[in-house]
Length: 141
Image 1 (cartoon, rainbow, N blue to C red):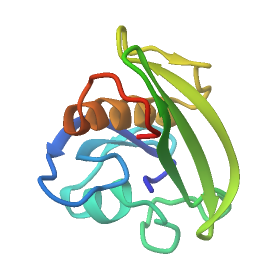
Image 2 (cartoon, helix red, strand yellow):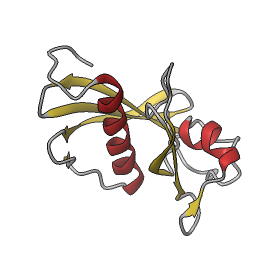
Image 3 (cartoon, rainbow, N blue to C red):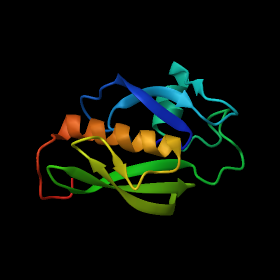
């Protein structure tokens, strides 16, 4: 469950075993303030990549309803991944929706309005395909 204000930009650490919310650990930008800032290495793993940062991260807005974002592949074929995006509040689903990620050109449809959600979906899908194969599968991930 990644922080809703985290914009992943590049892999910081590829996970060999286990799974992080975005599959790999990412370095990137925090959008919780008035302008984006690079995330610190000390906050990157615990707060940005793991989410539920309310009360843990000094930058997390006190009035924000969303506490983290979760992604799950719900359908997959050779051309695309269907990803369920879940916004959580205090460890419970707040709202959810599905998007399609094109394995061919990396486009997301429908395009998320939120820059961080869009970046997280793309990061999640790229890491998912790198770790779990880019080929066709009839199962749900």
